[in-house]
Every structure is written in structure tokens, then in C-alpha cells.
Length: 342
Image (cartoon, rainbow, N blue to C red; front, top):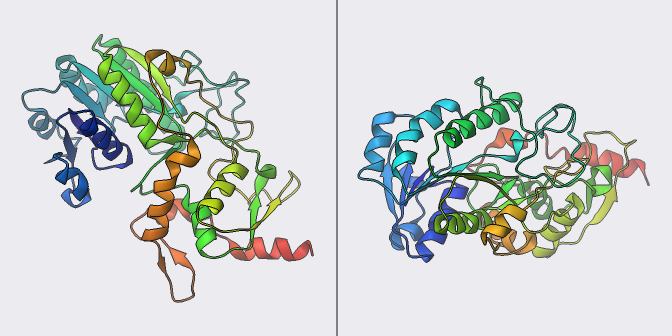
């Protein structure tokens, strides 16, 4: 099998799972230093190549692959680059996103106004129209994913599109759990939770996504499948899970809608909730490795072990997207709010 974007959170989880299943695994990436040593020791091979370079992509694909997994297909052009190989491979998996879904008013998970999905989202629910703008923007990301999906599915090739949500796993550059892990390491006595901590944005463990890809590999076909953990915890439950795993106790301050909307926000604060229906994957034979608390544990251990203390005693995480967390740790505002209540 060949994994494009193989050294990321999803790619490495897929490699671990498929190696266990007995596959020969090749991982494509631009930076060999990101190749985990344990994967090399287990027999995986790193192939240096740029996903956006057609010639390098063809060289990486070589004589063919029984299973092709693309973790870096974001646009219609990416899909067109992939098509010759998808038509040749026995099975291809494209990693898409739940960001493609829209509610009855056209709002999606990246909209300025939150979407309102009245029930768990099914694969045949409405999506954005395909787009070709900047896929790195909030408005462009989902539309570009839809365009890529349609090109691959309309080709007739045996392509399975997977739509995960809020992926978590070891090694990510945007580990959302850091929002609470840092607070634990900084020994925060109070955790503020917007919307009384009731927000839900369904998480997807990379290892559960890999288990679904293993199921797809055994059942090639042309389809769309959601990918999410077997439970959809609230933000309050996620905060409690992280604190409990790291043996920390804090007081929960559940904020109502009258509080400053910037206080207590966290990465899973979706209100109304965003939950994916997993019926189709289950009917295919997929069985998750575990719930959120079980599958997030290795990531929490990795985050705690990777953190370093600054001179002021607070903790930071090197080699992550620092801009992603720019507004996550306004402790002064939190302390001021807590003090105002006493």
C-alpha cells in the first residue's frame, strides 16, 4: 500500500494498522526526519516526494499499489493528479472532511454562524457546492474538498471517500487537546467552559480512522463513509477526561450565554452539536478500537512528555502550529472573571 502524506497523524496511524494487518507499507512525504523510527523498524519504507509534483507522484506510485491512501487531497487539481493512480489501484481512499456538510440554511462547520443539524449527519445529507478558491480559508476548505470528492467518485474508480471530524492522535501539529493539557501542566485551579460545556464537535481518533481504512481495504468499492469515534463527548466531558488522565483536579466554571463569548471557548464548542452518523461504516464491518477516552490517552501522554517549561514556569509545546493556539490561553482574562465572582 502507498500513503500520500504518510508522516502525518493519519498517515502514521494507517501505517501502524496496515503493517499489523500484514501489508507492505510505503509512506510518501517531503521530510524524512518526520518518519517515525518505529515504523521504519517495523518495515515501512519512506519515499521522498512532493504531493503536488506529478512526476514525483508517478515515481512514488511506481509499478502500482493494491491500496492507495491520500491524506493530502484538498482540491480538484489534487484529485485530477490522483486519478491515473486511482484507476490503476485495486482500492483508493481519499481523506475528506465533515466540513463539506451544510444545514438547511447553507451553514457549515467553518461558517461565521454555527450550523444547525437536527440529527446525526448522514453521508447523503446536503453538502457545499464544489469550489476552487483558496482551500486554506474557512470558506474555501469544505468547497474544495467537495470538488475533489466529485472528481474521484465521478471517475468510476474504486474510491472510498472518508469524512472524519476533529482528528486526534500522536504527533499532530495542531493537537486540539493541548487546549486543556497545557492548563493541566500549568496547574490551573479553574477551567472555564463556554455554553456550560455542552458543545459537541464529534472527534475522530486517527487509530479509529485507520481501522476504518483497514475495513475498506478488505472491501474495495466506490462510496462515501463518515469516520468518527463511537461516542461524541461534550467539551465538559473532554476536559474532565484529560484532567483525569493526567491526574489533575480543577474546579469547573460553567459559563452561560451572558458571559463574554471569548471566555471558556474550546475546540469542541459546537452549539448546536455536530455529530456524524456511523451506520454505513458499521454496516460495512468497521469496528472502532475504542471510545474517545481510550483512544486519546496515547496523545495525552505524548503531549505531556513533549512539553517544555519556560522561565516563567508555564509550559509550551515545541514544533506545533503556534498561531492555531494564539487565542487559547488568555489566563489574565480568565483570572479576572474568576475574581469577579468571589
